[in-house]
Amino acid sequence: MLLTERYKDKIEGILACYDRIVIHGNIPLLCFDGGMTSYLYQNNIKIFDYPNWANVLREELREHAERIAKENGLEIEFIRKIDVFRKDDRIQSIIEERGAHPGLVHIFSAMETCTSYKPWHDKQTGKTFLKTDSGKCLHYYFYFIDPDFGLCYLRVPTWCPFRLQFYMNGHNWLALRLSKQDITYQMRDNAFLHISDWEKAQQLSDHIRVEDLHQILDILANRYCPVIKKLHVTYRWSIMQVEYATDIIFRNPEDLKFLYDAIVYTAIHSVKPENIATFLGQKLHGNYEGEMGNRFNKRILGTRVKHQMGAVSIKMYDKFGYVLRIETTVNDVSQFKHFREVQQRDGTVTQKIAPMKKNIYSLFPLGRLLKAANHRYLEFVSSFDDPSDGAKKLEKLSESKKANDRSFKGFNFFSREDQQLFEVLAHGEFNINGLQNKSVRRLLPERSPASISRILKRLRVHGIIKKVSGTRKYYLTKLGKAVIALGLKTKELFIVPQLAQAETATN
Image (cartoon, rainbow, N blue to C red; front, side):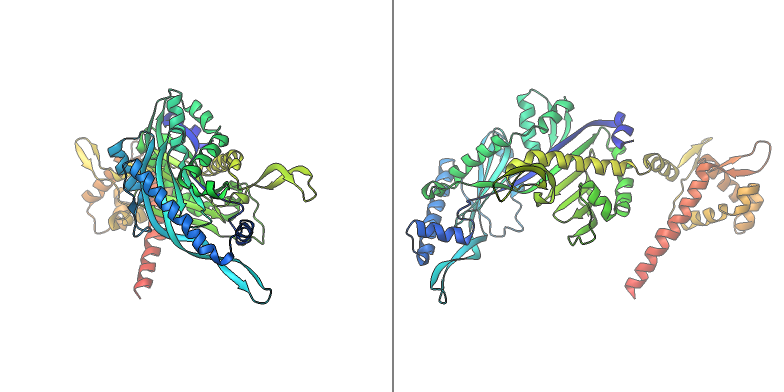
């Protein structure tokens, strides 16, 4: 049984949706050195004049960015240390002041690495051409709120070949669609905590129109990188990175905590390489050489378990205490295969299983594959023993209880005194013949009869032992046997190994 079914009375809703989407825009003719060389020859531009020619375009882009900033009453903010500056935090503070209405929000600029070309003359062949090079140039980040796609940015380099980068978030896109459908919702950051119609929301999420996205990308390229009009070229848009999330939203954070704390630790030890391949719909071959493994992280906002296979990873974490998120991240969509049209070298077209194309129109079939991957992971973690009942019992055993106006403290599995008591109760003779005050006192000679009586009462109040009617004998309950086993395992499997490691590290 899926945990979504097991806990359905405690779950507010379930939603599968694209999260982070990063798209690259390349000019096919200019994105490689041979193509750039051909373009220069076709337009009668000398190869060694390339730096001056590219510099003119750079200045045009800089002037254009300054003009856009002035028209919108903005100042371009230059970032000196791009690796440590949090653009998202700055943008959120600006939105809090200006509001979330559509329009240009802010412009950043920063010196960043970019692809470039350098003129080259081959003395042996006598040919002059461009060679691929790398350097740094000024980049602009245009942050804006689109009426259909929400908060986005377009990153524009000022040096040829002007490779663009576009970012959007699928949750923001879905929120705008919900508003247009008069579906109310409560959203925090990039997660929904409530939607008045979860089923309709899922239907909207499943039907992303890539044609609309393509249209807005072309508009943005012309708006923020106008040199393409002068060059008479257009962009080809491809998927750089996507995240697809399946969120299970709980009504009460305590219910999620009991469940999550146990399954996340189980997952990190239970998931094997072949499991990861199965989640992602892949086959694990003996000659596979990509990165593969599990990783567990403690974050400020909670814990996360991550499983990786090459350019694809699947992770599970909690958000805000209410959302259990399973998320697949893809850095190379061609790692997935699906049934599609394939053009052969002779020009014929066939239908076959083939690697997914990187163009943006793969977003629709890719969404189905990633949704299925998340579901397979959900099935896997749902197969773990239900930990919530045991976690609640453990918490109760740790708490003090009252009986006949007297308070009896709970049990501490890391207490030396309680560990000693567990070792005594684990004696086989007690399991067969039961235990009495005098038999326990024989193994704890430093304790008085009155002290042993209080211990027995404490064990009885917490449900660890039960008294045989008409006698002075006690037997361990089913819960008691489990508690004793847990107490001893805590010592043998956790405390002792950890102390041994600590001693080794000290030496």
